[in-house]
Image (cartoon, rainbow, N blue to C red; front, top):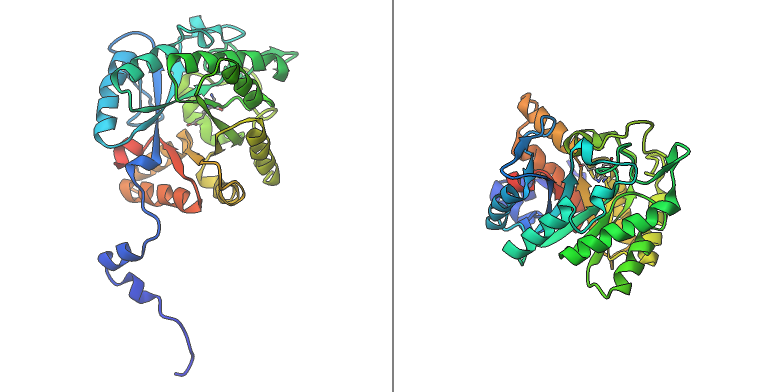
Length: 321
Ligand code: PBG
């Protein structure tokens, strides 16, 4: 046979050789670990749709972060969970220096000063209607929401957050937050959920955070999954408004966007969020015996990094490490 061809199988002969030729390796410092923080003390509530993930009160959060830190994970993202009776039209429970996130940030920074703390800035966890902004005439009032997001971010920053992460998908939210932080000379950076798609994969999160909208859906503010170029425009706009880090969310069904963002905006650290539905799907699939849990997570997380993400938010981070 005289056909010329190249041999690739020598790169795959053994695990040792495969390890040597791998060009993507996950490490604990790639991860940002998300937490759901709730009121009270000694609270550790299992989230039925997300096996292995809990809503924690601040005291138990400290114990969990001690474990996280021992694993070498040095970045975490905080979400607040409040009971329904504390919610109102404008999400005021989330917009105060005494909010559950502010209290958690202060505790984390006191106990674990070297942890890099990110906070979620959005109204949906605190509003009685469950939408990410103020509601008027049954739609979100974009511009009226901006001062509330700026105030929330400011409170998180004063509490000691290293990064605030606006996820409401209101136009101008980064500019409003940047202006407020600058006015107070706060060093806090902005990780913007720039290309955040309206996704079915957020299902379990809404259960975890109690933030499902009571009417309608989020398609008037989160991105339509049939758009690609617009995601890049969203990112460019956020950078122009003052975002330091950028995000593509969800991850696995949007790796094209991860790669395009990493190539187009190399100067801005890129985060991708393996969201609740991705986690739940892989966890449940493994539980059903469809695949090996560790291997399926290793493959999907490595793919997110291979696509170009510098950091990955994943509920599996702690279990992976
Ligand atoms: C909004 C927010 C959501 C998620 C992160 N921030 C929910 C939503 O937009 O509906 C989803 C994260 C996940 O699914 O893991 N504050």
